[in-house]
Image (tube, rainbow, N blue to C red):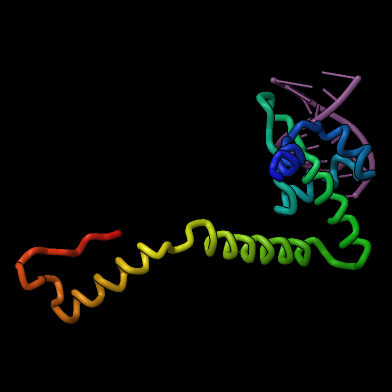
Length: 128
DNA sequence: ATTCTAACA
DNA sequence: TGTTAGGA
């Protein structure tokens, strides 16, 4: 359930193909990029290379424009979506394990209560 | 033949 | 946004 997204992310289309796929002029496609609405890759010769996801985004941009949303508005929409996606990712990218929680709580107790030593004098703070 | 950047009779 | 000049 991963190779699909990877393929859609592969930048293999030159601007000429994207023009035909989206019915947009090269001028418009480059302008939207300048506005931060799409970020195609560049090949060795500085040529823009688009992925299928880029094409979908371009098509989406065209729809927003038809619905009267200006470039700045579309930009704001994508910026907020990116922020929301980043937040969701940060929350699950490295979820705290039980061991992490125990270690954190133990450090806190030691810090305020001085429970760092046991009767036999050995330090039993062993993170699980 | 294609695409790129910069600029505007 | 269109178009064109001058390069790569």
